Length: 291
Image (cartoon, rainbow, N blue to C red):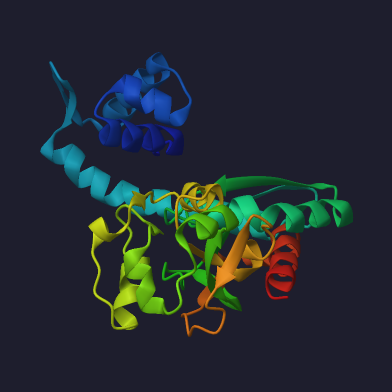
């Protein structure tokens, strides 16, 4: 048996996961003929049949399934090698990819990142506005800004701030409906909430008020959309105080209400954290978000 070609194994994993040569080619940004040649060369070198050709695509043979179990750890090890190599790169110029929730990416990070650009113009930023948990290990992002403690393995996570949360309503809404005098009065008002997320519902329950999804007369899991509806005058809603106080079209209600605060966590892969470029951005975000 000849020595295995790593590129052939990479193609094998891609084809096994995609179930077809065309799907693997898209995933690997390659071509279908190249995928086919790699699989044929691997099968010839091993003297084994790894796939059965079916009408629906390619199906792993029992031998192929066994090989895949060994090839996947090799792919993870290769990813780790790449992370180490990038983490030890000395050049600060290059790209750092950040993921943050829609609301943070829209209202909090732009000013901070603009200041970073003024101080380190050689660093390019990619910002992924998403509430999904990105996989830092596989380089979906270099740094994650999260309102909860990340629990992925092999991450360095730092809590950088506690963010105060406030209750807000547009001046026009309050002129039309009147001010709620106590928190319980919110039950008689239009309240903007989430569609599937239960953060606000849980907050009400902690305050001793039981409400369900139908309590909210407007619902959206996109926090930017929900906030824009509050500003537009639909009803009463919730947001970070630093965002609410910057919006002149709304007024804060019950500023002394004991609402739970939100933590801000920064996370980066343990190896990438040693990169000068990633460390520069990580430390800058930690300083500015913590102010």
